[in-house]
Structure formats: C-alpha cells, structure tokens
Image 1 (cartoon, rainbow, N blue to C red):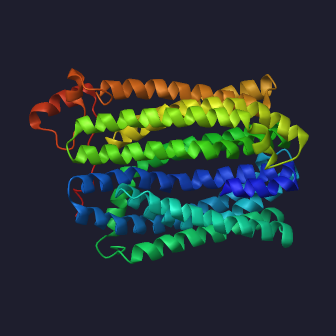
Image 2: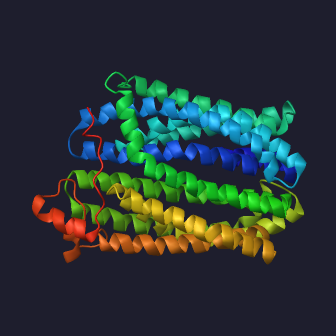
Image 3: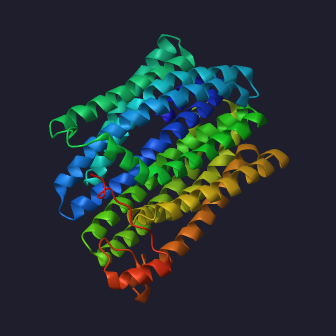
Length: 439
C-alpha cells in the first residue's frame, strides 16, 4: 500500500515523496520481524497437512493469532518511537517533519498488519494462497479512493495518505477474521506458551528480515543526505519495481510451502521437481517483467511524478532495477527451498551478511563519492543479490536438494532414520526444529 501512497503524494513534490519513502521503509522494517516469523512457522503448518495431520495444523492458527497480538502491540510502540528520530535522517527539514508525522500515524496499522499476516500465512501453509491475495486486493480497493479523498478533497497531504493506509489495513484484517471465523479460529486449542514456541522457531528468520529491511532504510538515509530528488527517484523506482518483485517473493513462498509439504509426505523426487519448476517460472517471469520495466519505464514513472529531475534520475535507476529483478528470481526460490527444509540459519546468515557487507559501503562509494545517486544504490543491490545467489546455490547443492544424485541421500527428510543421521550431520544438514516438544 506504500505504492499507492507514493503515487498520490508524488503530486505534492519531492519532499513529500522523500517523507513517504523513508517512513514507509521504517514501517516495513519494524513489521517485517513478525511477518517473517509467521512465514517461517508456516512451514510447520505445511508439514502437518502434508503428513495427514490437519487437526494439529489447525491448532497452530490460534497460536499464530496469540503471537500476532503480542508482536503487534510491541511493534506498534517501536514504530512510534522510531518516528521520533526520523527527522534527523533528512537533510530537508520539511521532509523530516512530514516523515515523522507519516510514520507515527502508520504505527497504528502495525498490529492490524500482523493479524492479517498471521491469518494469511497460516492459510498459505494450508495450501490456500487466494484468500490472502483477495484480502490484499480489498485493502488496495479501500486505500485508493481514501487516498484521493483525504489528500486532494480534504487537503490533508501526507497525513491523509497515512490515514488511508490505516483504514485499508483495518478492512483487510476485518475481512480475514470474518472469513476465518466461519471455519474456526482455534483460539482455545492454543496457548501463549506455544506462541512463544512459534516465536522461537521463526526468530532467526525474523531477525534476518529486519536486518535485511534495515538495509533499505540505511540506503534511504544515505540517499536522503544526497538530496530529496535522489531519494524521491529511489522511492518511485522502488514502488514501480515492487509490482514485479512481489510475484518473485510469492514464488519463493510457494516453493517454501510446497517443499515442506513434499518433505512431510516423504517425497524427495517431488520436492526436486517443484524446485526446478520454481526456477523456470520465476526466471521466465522476471525476464519478461524486466524487459517491460525498461520499455515502459517513463510512462510508469510519470504515474508518480512530473518533476523533470526526479524522472531523469528514476530513468537511470530502472535499468538496474530490471537487472535486480532477474537476479532476485533464483535468490527467492533458493531462500524458499532452504526454508522449506528448515535451514533457516544459513538463509539468515547469507541474506543478512550480503546485505550489510555489500550494499551500504558500495552505496556510499557509488552514490556519494562517484556522484551516481540513486542509480549507485541499485548497482550495489545487484552486487549484493548476485553474491547471495552464489552462496545459497552452493548450500542447496551441498544438501542434494537440486537434482537426484548420490549426495541427495544426505538431504534432510521429515523423519530421518538413525542409520542416515550421522551422514546428515557430517554434511551440515539443517537441524530439525519443531513445536512438537511443547505441551
């Protein structure tokens, strides 16, 4: 929904765009922990459905909802506190003030976002991806007219954009809760102790996602020091590219769920077939989307702004965004594959390590020292993802997850025998994590 906010506030000038860019990144960074925890824990949901244990899988929904309430309150408070320090990020004092106000208002939506995420991720683990998609569509249907009314009719500017997003998120959460209540929320079958177990299971992925998203906030802060024009160009290009990036994330999530289900059913051949299909589908999509991104870049950028300087900088960024799109295709599938076999720690180390070791210093070098602005930041991200793809590919190959070979016997399975457990440990197979030990 930040994309909708960006499209509307783009008519208000570079300062408003810069404010929404940094504020939206801050909210995304804070909420990403909870979202990632549920994304990791849904692997257990998929495994239980795959193993023919639907009742145990349903119990996890109540657990997810309990955890969403806990994390929602904490994350909302953190978002509000973060908003107080955001004016210091901007060289432009007007952008800084607007950014703090926008982020403070949007902190109200954070608990709602995590409730929506808990429901959506659980249903994805159960094999239903349509419900979450319909809820997201509903939220945007609500968000678009409210943005138009609050910004242009009421004249509330950036404040109106933030309020529209809060109301849209409330509609999304209400729709998901109402739909699931007919089937049951399974609240009484759960406990806060199990909720803490889910938190422990997904905390590695949560920390990974926060640190990964924090890099975007750092990049935005670095570009804010260059100027509002470069930050505005970065924000617009990011929102344009997100329309293409989100399906790639979905391919990765689908790979994670299907891999976990195949693993729970004890079908490694099916697992490898699904991974190959994920690679082919995501690479084909990213190739077509990247080409369209370059060809239609000017028209897409003009949907957000008419500022000539911002358009010129954004045009340079889109070329690198298209390359990043192609690199992210295998990156997301590989992350989904390894999460599906519960190799969370390796994915976290690779994603976070590449993000922090590569992107910030390269952005400083290219954007500041060489004066390439927003384009320099996107060059740095391309290098980061290329390094990540290489490392995860080596890990998946080592575990025998990509093709059938003698090494595949060392790949993790849902119920490894005692005879094969020693080779698995020797080859560095991921440690099994489960909620089954909790009462």
